[in-house]
Length: 139
Image 1 (cartoon, rainbow, N blue to C red):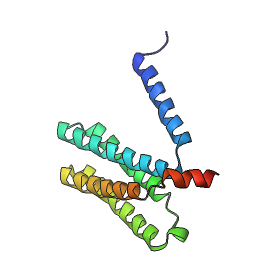
Image 2 (tube, rainbow, N blue to C red):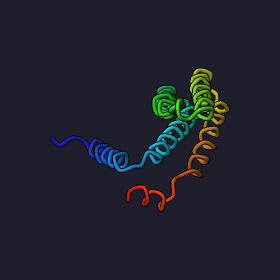
Image 3 (tube, helix red, strand yellow):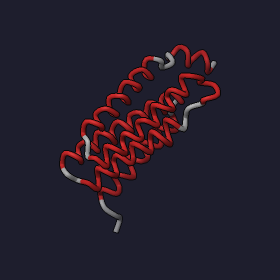
């Protein structure tokens, strides 16, 4: 009559994510994209180990979409100069490697891309605007 318990839990989780996105700063949004891609790759690794081809493919595809449509699409190559161009090339490389990992069932390739993304996420966190900077900008 009211749907399944799982459907209600999913709706609640989606509201939490949407609220987090609406309230997030641009810096936090990029962090969320990194986190989403890292989780998708980790799930792909889990499904690959379990031999679950369908879910492995879906997870790796999700990671590719986050990298291509989120991280790569957010680059401003006009303003970012050489750094943005290098990141664009790196994101393209990651997408190709993830596709290859999916086709070849390669844990090592998933590990490689996961490590690259994790390093970028750590670097991104190091340049996070401080709370004091945000408060001054708001004032």
